[in-house]
Length: 261
Length: 261
DNA sequence: GAGTGGTCTAGACCACGAC
DNA sequence: TCGTGGTCTAGACCACTCG
Image 1: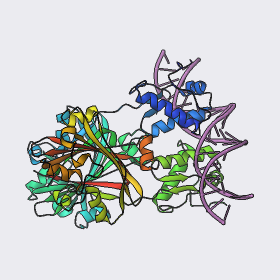
Image 2 (image 1 turned 30 degrees about the horizontal axis):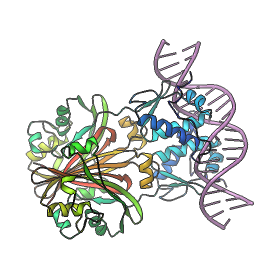
Image 3 (image 1 turned 120 degrees about the vertical axis):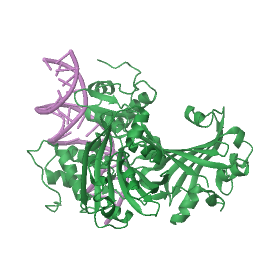
Image 4 (image 1 turned 90 degrees about the vertical axis):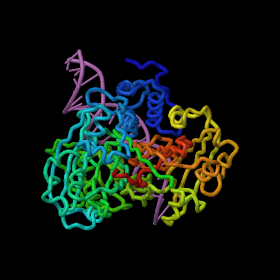
């Protein structure tokens, strides 16, 4: 089961670069040059051990580098594979425009339908709670808020989970406090209830996921999350909702339009 | 040199969870609860080996998990430390507004001054080249482009590097093709040359850095990059510049404003 | 020099997946 | 059953930092 010679290089014993880094470099170069493509199986640990004449831990060290870079994923009992790049969803900056709500659709559904993919929501949870310091500050320090948690899936894959927070005086007793907020989502209900929306502020960060986020989004090693915090303002300048969203970074590209004036 | 008992838990031999994951869980919990703070030194590998009664590789495995999560950084010969969170720069959605340019400042400088930090630019490189397929498509398929590469540092730390691409017919022979494009940067020069800017489109992705990007930005393990591609349009609807930026994700928060209409 | 993490070896046994 | 990766051991030597 020898590897084709020339597929991977040979080690440079004179190099200062650690052996496992050299092996990682060889594999990365092979991936970059297309000798291994998305979903392809990389040589097994045993094959790499034999090819390079090193111990197994050295080979595993090399492979773990590639996994940390998001280039490879291992599957127990099957092998190590070039990580497939899932299709990305492009979130446009007009995704909360009223014309989409007016069609009776929520923002997530609008995007999914436009892309021709199947979307689902699960894990819906609606409850009243005491806001975190951050959420409280953004909403003008309400004592309690309504929290709406849910997870979104595209073609069966979880891609984001989000929590909307609304001041209780706005949400309590409305359909917003119901599991199903009705067509157009909570933004449509807010406007019906006299909170005409003016604009949204979004803050974007990227970081590595917590173990809980890895579970929620089924994230492979080497895949960061995008953390998006959106605040909705009505025409009176009041913050009426804060939405905290954690997204699988390999599933999205966010698009915005900026003024030049 | 025994660790204070109770600082870290003890292993649960009946658990299915791997020993190194249990150790990582203990350390993570201690960090989350503030028993170790930013910049604090974690117990040394030797101390952890003695405390848990496991081999060194098991301890190193646990520590590498925390590093992959961006929670810890190791320093050769010193120890493993809780990763310090650098101050983030907030990039506002009006950062390319004309009023900032009119003051003779570039966008990066405006942000830096507002935050009261020292900013530098290095590695400036200006050259004509054949555009990549992606850049070419965004710019309306010019045969050649002017590329302006540079790296930005805040208080001495590299935080982003960027390349601006402009169609040659726009840039050649202007101050845009000079190392120093003059006050207000290339956007000011574009407007002087009759390309009045209308708006910018920005696309945002997040991913793990390539080894080259790790070097350029001095990134710790477990820190992703934000990849931002901005296209500038003039009032005639022509794409006059594409700027490709790679940013250390732990140094920025991006802010945008979205219309509700 | 003492303590730290970085690299590497040569094994072992286990859990999972495919045939 | 066999090949795969997952976990773990018990060492070794090295490079770096600090006092």
